Length: 390
Image (cartoon, rainbow, N blue to C red):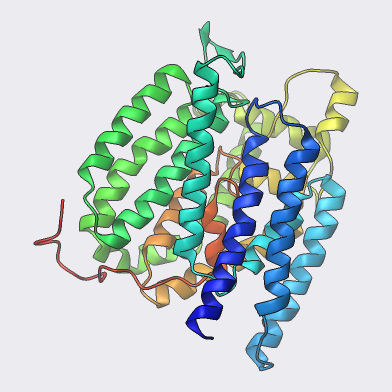
């Protein structure tokens, strides 16, 4: 493919992704924008990506490409069924974004994510402090959990965490200084823990401190077979861990360890147990929130674990397909010695044990790496750190 054609293809995708991000992220804020306007942004963006797929996504008809086409069609069919069953159209949109990212320059898509998400973050915070929009009235332990214009404190802090991960990726690739970022992680992490009381999001920000140091100076450790195995299978390992925790809590609700984990995670285990008892595991997905409201009224209920969102709301079949896709995607990147994304996916998978953002592309931009073109790491994996910028 010519350089000019590839640039047009990437720019068309990035324009569509930008429109999608605007429409979707604004839905997480208190900006009084009519839903129809947000949907126009989203559907126009997805339309541009579909146009890109129609114009540029030709394939060579060999055994490998035919298998990929068949798998993509199966994935689309399952996504449509799960979206219909769970009333979650985002599942089909994720398919379009992931498949549509084929051959596009991931670094440009990542920069699009950073520009749009940071811009909306700043505008939202300014609008809140100027009194143009409200914030949530969340309270825990008698303390107000500020959301600074976002609908929930967790949305606000999760967005910051994923922005930091996107920036961290570019930082390590370009061998940029890290100590200014470490300082920023500490300041923002402390601010969010005190002002938002978002323990998961703030904890994720703090975890990025050892992560960026490790990726800066110890990337060669990622060549270890055991670590590679964990990175390849992170989605399945964390899924199994989540299932074991919830089933153990169902069978042994008085376990001191599990009670402490439940309290520490704001009773996420309890809500997962409620979901299992009310709805059960689902093969193809099911709508749960309207049904729960009809049965229990306005009692507060949510599922925050990405894995239990799959198991109960999106469906086990889709979950298995997603796990297979990411297993082979990570395996391919490890074989090509592209170690940063697999390691960041490991962090995201761990975060997703009690976070719901894994399959939300307005947060997890790294979903696009399944088919996007990943340029070689600027710094070789085995290069000594001597002489590097700090």
